[in-house]
Image (cartoon, rainbow, N blue to C red; front, side, top):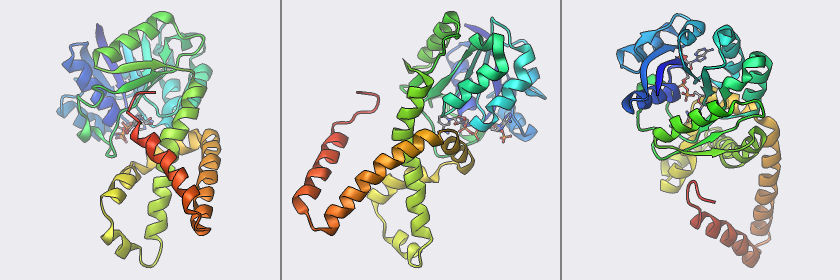
Length: 288
Ligand code: NAP
């Protein structure tokens, strides 16, 4: 399907995409670039990429598909670095967890060639980062959200959708704004709360002791608190406006639950828990 993948950011997400594309026979050659030469070298040693590029621009040279798998805060600089080699025939995608900032950067930087860019967010990942954890199965059975804009070329959108589907993904399309609002609620706020909970516990006198007593509920609830700090710093800042809106809604629910507990208002407290419990029991990943 593709001759050459130009991979910028040979970490968990980018490395997994390269491995999956190769395994599916969707690409003949992968040329990769990462900020640290040691990462790029490791990616080649692991067979994630075939050729090491000394710059982002050279990773793009000769590619018919390009994937940006860098922190969202590095998207604009990366697009600036490659823009001279982006052509109308080249499919350029990203995997960033936020989409409005990425789309705004693409509009500003790619200008007439913005139609080549198909913004993507695979709903897949791990708490660990780095090429060492790249996994060709990472995307299998997962959702991928594409957030095209009015200037996105229909042909590129179709090719992007076909590529993700060929990797075993279920593709959904939505506007970048709708994406950021939804993921503030179901991803960014839960991470923030998980970080806050851990932070609050470890910074109290008996925190260590409490942690020693914690069980599986705590383990499940805080799994995401072990995520990559730099990546999450970027995501929380990039989507801060939607995050604040969702945090306000959460604060109201938290306040109401606490108030009912404080007032020993058992019936009402149970009713609120019942609503949450049945909503969670009926929830299935990827289903409305
Ligand atoms: P990662 O494993 O840390 O990989 C990021 C890679 O980007 C690293 O190889 C890093 O190189 C490289 N990099 C950083 N700045 C760069 C720059 N300016 N130019 C070129 N390369 C650069 O992180 P990841 O988990 O793959 O995350 C990548 C993207 O995927 C992020 O935008 C994130 O929002 C998104 N995402 C992540 C998840 C998840 O669960 N992890 C899920 C969905 C989406 P060095 O090794 O040299 O530092």
